[in-house]
Length: 292
Image (tube, rainbow, N blue to C red):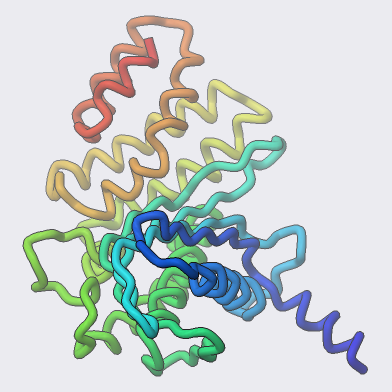
């Protein structure tokens, strides 16, 4: 019976999540609490059933959560930043494409040794598990969006529900009116559901299914489709150049785009794509010059 239970639990795993907690900035003699936090988050992410579909073990989504602790006070008050990344395999290759890369500067939470890590949809039991659940659903949403047009909607809806539940929370990152920055969880999910950003939702699908996944069979056609999808991204840039959703796309894709378009044979074509990318992703202008 125990072996049967373990077999069922293994099949329920949706993520292959690597977790790192960096506490180098914290002056504390005994740092075992940080390793315990790391292990608790890894277990929380990797042993729960997040997706409604049955995900086989070899299909588990590859992702990483890197937490840098800036402040810590006993018994377990944390202020940190977290970088959340995920990847998906490209058809017909051994290459994994990064599809989500978000740096959250407002991870404020409490955690103590032996604290239960519980989460239920519709409840904000703790800020830590709400943060983790939000990003679990964001990772799933982006992943599904790359396989079917707007396929991630059910998971983005769950992430949006968490944001709504946390509106009365004192912790930062959940509300529209905090600070002057739009780099928060509210802004990201708000962008995703805003009709003005639908071309970018569309681009995620075009880029991966009609671009990268095609390149193992036809490199030129796949590359052309990726270039076409960038015109969809350009539509969003023209109406909201500082969009956090737009920035998140390029945070994940800028290096990959350089490698894709380095393969163009014509310098004129290379310059054309450099000009386009430099317009819609100003932060990475220097990076795109490497295409030539």
